[in-house]
Image 1 (cartoon, rainbow, N blue to C red):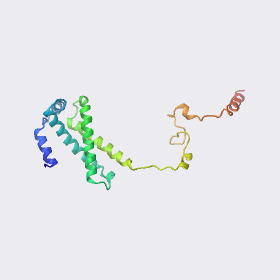
Image 2: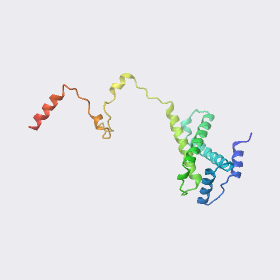
Image 3: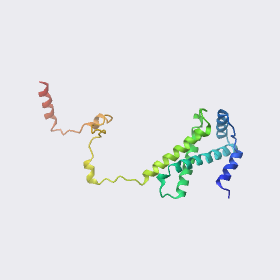
Image 4: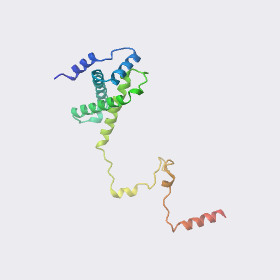
Length: 179
């Protein structure tokens, strides 16, 4: 069985994209990934290997979030990130504007996917335990940072529902204040 590095080298040699010209490089990538047959498969495999390297790099950069995690877990997250990034790139291929190198644009997807997976994993095992008796201590209405009602709260949610027996008394007070 070949190593990943050897497979990547073979894909790089068979790659339809080997250019310094940014726009020409981008057009070749788009054409190769938009086509059909073996050329598309080679381009997709080459791009996936690049995305996998980018995802591994990002996960390694965020390794503090994986304290105690097995290497297989991190490799699995990198593979999932690369898979999702490749899928997103293929779906958004027509939005590539040739303003940067195609690979730079593609790396963005892998880095974003890896970062999202890292953040999700960090919250997977987090729990905010609230005992049933603590629910009564939470404010009935949303408050902003200063303890005031949040102005973004819908109007109907700001006012507490009034008891029908209190309405006439309030109306009477309003009538007295107008006189």
